[in-house]
Length: 415
Image (tube, rainbow, N blue to C red; front, side, top):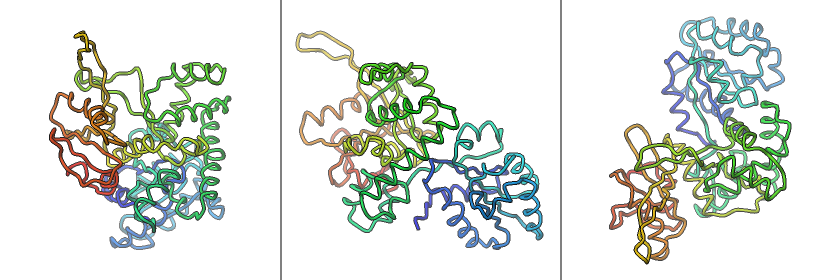
């Protein structure tokens, strides 16, 4: 079993804060295993008695009667017969009627409450509005490459090939053949993720939603905006979908944790640029499945994986833009806009990270380094390359590091 240590640590750190701990994340990313298996075992190792841990999985048909709030509260009251803190662990809590009222009632009893929810009624914005500041969200991602590698029996290179094609949903590791993996992912996209979003937001044009997913999946690493996407539908599909509809659908996909957006940030001007945004998928296997496994470009996949890794490590991630003035061959000056792939912020810490699939000639090196050389501050600059190289600082002071070292070493940003 993959322990998911970072999330276990977050659960541990959250105890005693008086809030309901809500574990969110895309479906099948491992929330139920964390709450129902990993966390209870950890509590027992900390000395919590077994009878002080009350776990209910509401999607278990044998527990159907407990979906009635009064029946559930009666059961909890009967089990809380001793002294000390009780730990209430509720999986798929949205299946219980009036669950918000029930959780608020349990809070008044001094319980430590941990819940998961993943269907169309229990997504990010619902937590904010329904718990009204009385909840701490712990957001869970699919397996990082490091977590995936820890459970993979082959070489690191072979693990990367699997991961970059089929992604990090934990169940993927249990399948033996590519056919089983592709079928699993395709079924999830069609029967779980899209269905949830269509039901929750009452989307009538589900085909338009699927087409939008394909556009976003084929555009990772490229700036997008709703108007440009709307024009793409018109030119490629001869189909009119307004930019307002595109914007609403993207919001639905973001709130459902399928995609995440990186805003464009003017590094010199220290302000956000609202015109275009980059979108990345929370799981690269789902992205590949949406495209029928036909556009597996490793350079774009590498960029998506690096973005997810930075998010996993707790950074707020933007796409950086730097403007420079350059002279052409005739001496004319013109304004150039250069891009830093990622600006990663965490409190007072900041890193500029460039995803450079190849830097095997002088022209490519100049292209990848140009934006970093024009960043007007002294925060650390990092170039991640696909090649297997020992990490080193080049003559400009930039850290160059191979992809595997970056992903597998937790201190890679500070080498």
